[in-house]
Image (tube, rainbow, N blue to C red):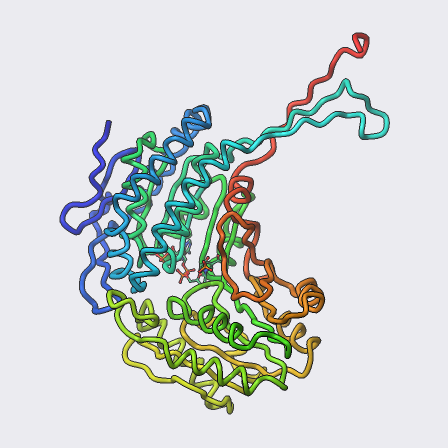
Amino acid sequence: MFSCVFREGNTYKNLVNGQWLESKSGERIKIYSPVDDSLVGEIQAQSKKDVDFAIDSAKKAQKAWAQTPISERANIIHKAARIMEKYEEEIADILMKEIAKSKSSAISEVKRTIDFIHFTAETAKRMTGETIYGDSFPGFDKTKISLVDRVPLGVILCISPFNYPVNLSASKIAPALVAGNSVVFKPPTQGSISAMYLGQIFCEAGIPAGVLNIITGKGSEIGDYLITHPEIDMINFTGSTEIGHRISNKAGMIPLLLELGGKDAAIVLEDCDLDETAQNIVKGAFNYSGQRCTAVKRVLVMEEIADELANKIVEQVEKLSVGKPEDDAQITPLISNKAADFVQELIDDAIEKGAKLLIGNKREKNYIWPTVFDNVTEDMRIAWEEPFGPVLPIIRVKNIEEAIEISNKSEYGLQGAVFTKNIDKAFAIAQKLEVGTVQINNKTERGPDHFPFLGVKASGLGTQGIRYSIEAMTRSKAIVINLDKDLQ
Ligand code: NAP
Ligand code: G3H
């Protein structure tokens, strides 16, 4: 039995082959808080040798783990969720410091993750295979029977982004593990410390050595080595479209699950409940300062009601507090100055090209005040690019056809929202939108986490969501029985 001590002081080690190890290179990365530049801790900068050892350990451990009865695997997963409750406050505290998430959102990320892990264990226990008889195909009879089971893929490389370092990591790791895979987990560098708690809780829950391994280090340095490693059987990635493309270009003939960027549009029709719509749009656009793949990233509103909607949006935005995570401010600093520079570029471009600034365009370091533009036109970058920050463009449209056209012109296709009291119109629009999910009368959002979650076009490949994730990280295995025809 190995000890589960994942840090010494504020230096964090990595779980590899059941032990908490330092990098063989001896190098570390200092993680500073985006809130006040204070040192949050130091993580290991792992080398290619560390990667080889982690993947080799995962490969060796996977076969025995796959043979472990699913109820036993599920018990360990459940236990990990219970252990996570013990760390709830500690993890939320680190999330506030490391990625500047507001206190209530940080707590909610941890609670949601605990629920996610339990639900995953339960779902896996209830998943079954199928029996198919040959006689439904012409020329065959019931003596030919296919028993179709689902089997694990092997070693899954899980890579997660900074904005939900705990939840979007657990939502890969737990389904992968419960399905009988082993995991090599690469957390986002800014977010590694929060994510490392997952190693700690699974270690305490008794995950066998080598079944879950963590690799930290900059994606720009070890990413390519990881994604092209011949012993990786599948990559489950959430992050930017840029890195998603890179992975799909470089990885070999292995399954990929990619959840990437978005430019979710809220289409607002004349007959909607304007107050509710404005509230939804503002929450959707500005939660965690807009740093969510599913944030509302543009509003396409019918001209007739555009003034009224814009006023109501501004009324809501005026109420948003800007400040520190520990004060539970709604708008907290962006993840880095570089991210804030990018958002500012989009704001400046919109102003230069004549967008009407309704509120915002104030910046101090990596704090960007919530900003809303009206009269945004298609020549502006903010109409198409994902700011990953607190900026909302309003584009006025003449009719539903124009709204659908602009929505579908985007390279992205994550989600869309339609606000109207006319369910027939909503349904007709929903069917035409080129996205993974359409929300009717609600902001775009991922949860509840057992729903399918997917992006089309540049927003992704494959489907997540508890059962869907388990399916994506397993494959069909058919055993065909050929009965003696004479005995029938
Ligand atoms: P990112 O820069 O793409 O990073 C995501 C992860 O990829 C990080 O762990 C990063 O490591 C790693 N990485 C970087 N270069 C790599 C390489 N060459 N090979 C392998 N991995 C590499 O994204 P982010 O800034 O963390 O997150 C924001 C983006 O994620 C936004 O575009 C957002 O829309 C998207 N997102 C999508 C979803 C969804 O479900 N659709 C959910 C959340 C976020 P380092 O941190 O070390 O660079
Ligand atoms: O950033 C992407 C997340 O998957 C969004 O999840 O809609 O629950 O904030 P959320």
